[in-house]
Image 1: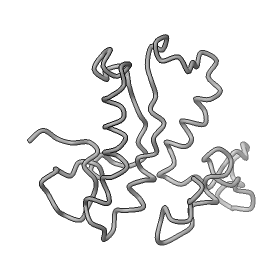
Image 2: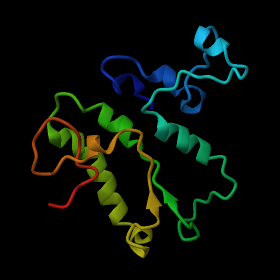
Image 3: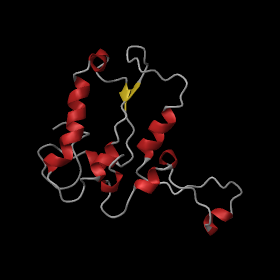
Image 4: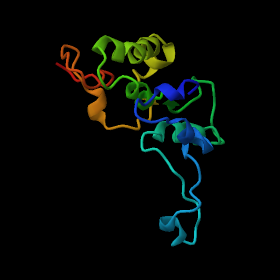
Amino acid sequence: MEDCHSINQWYDICEYLSNSGLGPQLTNSRDVDDFPNKSWFATNQFLLEVIFCTRMKDYKFLTNDLAMASVVNVPFYASLEISRHLWGLYTSVKDVVSNDLIKFLVEQSEWKRMWSKDYFLIVGRVTWDFRRMPHNQSFWGSNFFRLPE
């Protein structure tokens, strides 16, 4: 999040990270004035991961002890990471961070306990952006959600 200016090449996403990922509150919009509840925000469609992770921090049954956890959320912002690389970069650049995460996770004893069935992560983009086959050198997407060959 520190380098939020580099997430999107067409506009600065940093302002949308405010308010725990909901973005700035809308105040003077005729579309909002018709509704009695003024809780409208300029939320970016790709910030679901940030919103979810921020809200999870308030969950009263949250633990950092993986041995006690029923499920484990992996707080990885896959959508924001791939947003940096969707247009015009080599596939090897697109896959570095997600491949490092996968390598780290599978080496953990907690991961092996149930072979990842108790792990989940939130992704704020369509799965198409993460389903590039490893042998496919097309410019679009990453291979984070690898499909079997």
